Image (cartoon, rainbow, N blue to C red; front, side):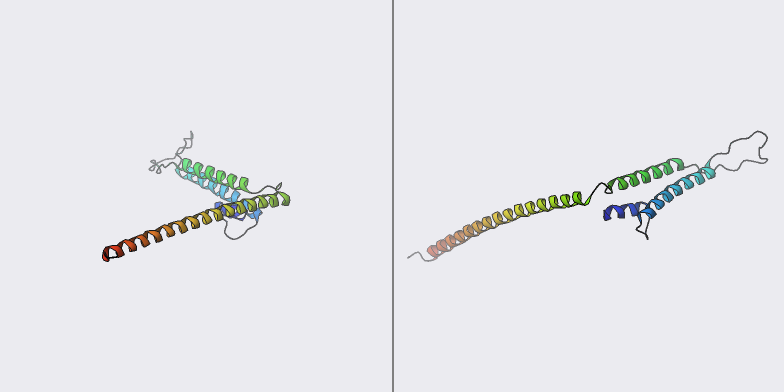
Length: 156
């Protein structure tokens, strides 16, 4: 659970407080920041709409550089919302009682013991194979020594 809360904390750029209520207020603040930024960009970059009788006198200034800010902010807002939903959904529910958690831990412990037993069997098998290989190498070395002794001393 701590990992998930940490991920949620990162998603909302929360650094100091571990209170879950504070996490949610930071989540909504981040969403509000995205919305405010997008409204600010719209105000800055949107072409002006003509209103009859309220035209400005003078020449039109150069139109602001048009970038696809709407798409950028829509993606940011959607991605943040999706990340937050995933993190919140991954938190344990209130229905996760102590008994369920203990049963889950017991199952994990049994799986761990089974894996340890299998690992021990594999290690034992490997040690037996190593002993056989060492015995075979010893026999080969002994045979080579016997052959070299016969070659160097042909009178025996």
